[in-house]
Length: 455
Image 1 (cartoon, rainbow, N blue to C red):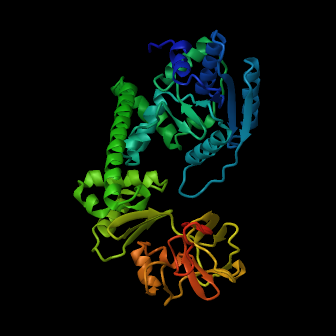
Image 2 (tube, rainbow, N blue to C red; image 1 turned 180 degrees about the vertical axis):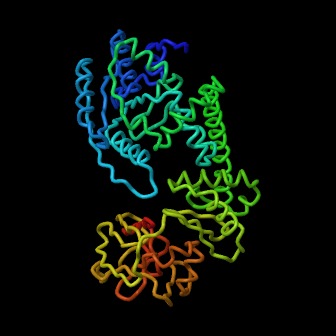
């Protein structure tokens, strides 16, 4: 007969008061299943026993996925139970439209988290009832997907989520201990019949694989939890190393992380360290992660390209390019028409389709001024057509715009989109990068400071 550990509300939840002393609300994700029901009962019992003056408010949220016939009945049952304990419950309905090549489980999860992110306020803790069996299932799923140390870290005990923090107080507790507690407290929970279908990957692991592993290796849950914890530590060390490398290569490039990484420095790193840095660098820019094949293509095609080449490797939502010995990554640029022209009154910001935003503010010693007799009504914004010339202020004769943009280190993928500011047919400024001779403000003279937000 299995021996069950008695759940201690104080042992499980006291750390939350210590680690998050300024928490305003404990928001329990309450599905009505045994895990979330036990978590809500533990929170209700624990907070009722505290004598401190400033305790967080306990509330709950129930997500109605609408995937089962009795979904509305389940929501009502959760509402009734929450009322018994005087816990405010918010019921949120979501609509899930099955998408190809994406599991229903993943889509339901995404829908839940969208609701959580919307509801969380600063100072909120979102408490979820995930336990050690869930952790084992997650680890196995990640292994089957070929995940690295980040994925094999499985579910963290806590992490930031929107304006609040997601916390899993039961992560070290087994499902059997949770069920034993629920029976001891005579709690009535909801049994979702879909949980008994092995058609879902997680259910297959729960119903068929993990029980067999536990028969052979009784400590399998503890072992998997330890592996997840060690993987999470490895990932953290990788992140810290990548941050050091990113800073070193950004300094070598003469700019911040977003300004590119020095290709020469990347080539000096070992293959593993280089890939670790690239993943970190992309994540810092909130860009989609590449597959292993795509990452190898970046190394082979972009980093190791000839010095005079302009290679690009892309995947959905990301383009990785090389320019002037630096590696750049960005989201695909929006649609753009080089023939576009805009009138600009020099009073407010102007959005340029596919070419970013120009803004302006009056100032003393500004970069641009309009000579007497020239009206802002004459000012237009255009884009390169070829053959343009400009005489930069203080630099002597006229120069071809193409050469000037190269000298200004404008990446090749942006040059066509650089806003050119004209008065009549005379080019008077190139975005926020230079002003033409005769159009610059002298010391102490009122003028305009232009800023270009790149697309």
